[in-house]
Amino acid sequence: MEKSYLNISKASDVADAGGRRIYRFFEMIPAIISLGTLFGVLVFSWLFPSGVAIFIICFCFYYLFRILYFSLHQTVGYFRVKSNMKKDWLKELRKISRWKSIYHIIILPTYKESKEIIEESIESLVKSDYPKEKMIVVLAVEKRAGKNFEDQAGDIAKKYEDIFFQFLVAVHPDEIKGEIGGKGSNTAWAGKEVKEKVIDKLAMPYENILVSTFDIDTKVFFQYFSCLTWHYLTEPNPMNASYQPVPVYNNNIWSASLFSRVVSTSNTFWQMIQQERSEKLTTYSSHSTPGKVFFEVGYPCNVVSDDSRIFWKAYLYYDGNYRVVPIYYLVSMDAVLAKNFWRTILNQYKQQRRWAWGCDEIPYMLFGFWKNKKISLGSKISHLFTVIDGFWSWATAALLLFLLGWLPILLGGSKFNFSVLSFNLPILTSQIMTVSMVGMFVSAILSTMLLPPVPKTMKWYLRWFKKSTVFLQWIFLPITLILFGSLPALDAQIRLMLGKYMGFWVTEKIRK
Image 1 (cartoon, helix red, strand yellow):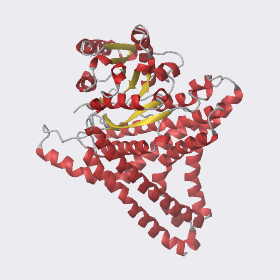
Image 2 (spheres, helix red, strand yellow):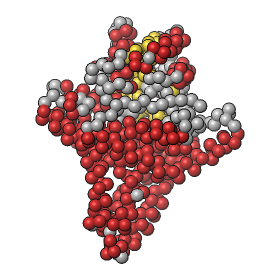
Image 3 (cartoon, one colour):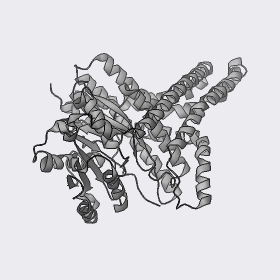
Image 4 (cartoon, one colour):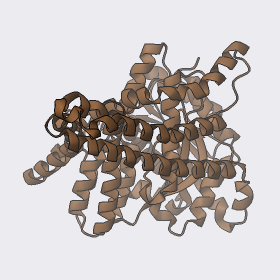
């Protein structure tokens, strides 16, 4: 079966005119659904205020049950993580005879990050318990970053090349036709380099290789690769699965601003929730892929959301016989932090918008499901509902809950405002939202239990202040959900609808 559609990144990539029009329509769907919901509430609050009031109440109840459901998964996920972090995975791994045959390729794409940040990540690999002679590190540098950063990569390679089985510096050329400059294209190039210069040269079997594609600030915990290898070797269908750890943003958490901590913690808990629903799980940020899949399917080089696209590309390539195995083990990255407060706010918004650009998976999935007849209809519907609902909720839920619920009273006119429904609307919604605060309390409690110790180098009054704000920061959750949730999500969806395609924006990383 022809599978050229696997490499589509936008409507113009489709060869035939009819297919282009269909894909272009699919690109409009996320914004049509989200904007249709918001404008519908606005218009119908004036025309049919009673109907909208009932919708708002039902939506609040729906979100209450959703929050309670997610809080349960979040709590279960947390305790599984804590249990797995304490387990001796290398001891478990030694019970499996062929574990020593497994090699790990770790690709670290970098663009103008400092030597300090890069070496922090590599040092975490050095300190991990998995044998270093089974690890191949690829530091993937961008040519467009300049010669200084190539020289920096060379210096780092000299420092660590005798520690690992191989340490390779891959320099990604700029302006390659059909690519989008960013993490995905850099990672794809690095994969080709290590395949040609190490894997194929040494005739290493692909089934004995796991490829971890990490952000440059990703730090692994001590037993990560032992845990990963155990899951790979005990998975019934290991070649048709990716492996997803739980990300935390603790590298610089005590230096990050209040709202950055809320956003970062929310992302961590959302991933914990998704781990509990493995049938709905896709790859996100730092993850691991079997060598056979990475080299056979091909890492995406022409999209912004490469971390999720590699899953959907593999899912379509293997006709639905592909899944993500949840690994309840942590990897740590940076929370958004810039040189000043306002720049941090801007960077946080841009990062969320880039993540929200993952809505371009919706047209890719729709088009791929249309082309691929071997995947069952039930699987297609299930995956589409999960992804569309996720991006719709991301863009609309906070606005509906915290702002638009009052519209029927404001626009409904005197006839509606003197009705029993009008009187009870704010009472019911406020009571429902009060009960739903249980989810916030669960997040607040669990977030403190995941935090690393406050650095002793920080002055005592700053340590006290930082600790005291850990709970207080959650009162800003409604503002955070709108400013760094709904707005960047709508921004991304509208851009996709208008064909204003985004490039890859690199999140600034600093140390204070």
